[in-house]
Image (tube, rainbow, N blue to C red; front, side, top):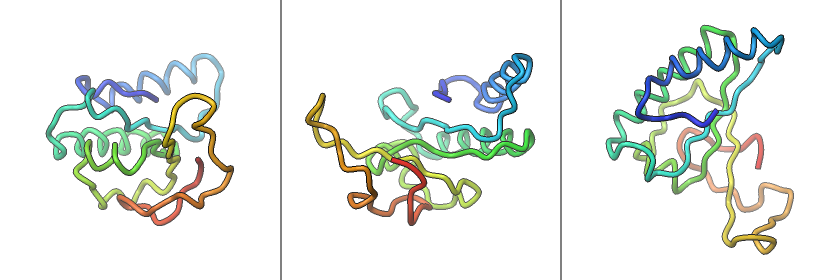
Length: 123
């Protein structure tokens, strides 16, 4: 889910889940995209509250929520928040270049701990 940080996050997640349910999908997990700091308010506290509300709504639906981000974006958007222990799944990206040169090895060798995550689930 690519959220609009200027809209209510829990409502965005609820709309997504209800739409998918109406279409016959059984949703078990959703990845929340926390990237592009320029698109987020410059108040990390408010951004963390936004993410917390999305996490709470996902829990109400019985959905496992993962976060898609990287070290830099997480620090810029949340101030490096480490208290989101309810979100265990991290899909990180670490791309030092662009285009075909940006391809990376299919392992976690370039992962460094950040936020509440000591290990990633996906790359």
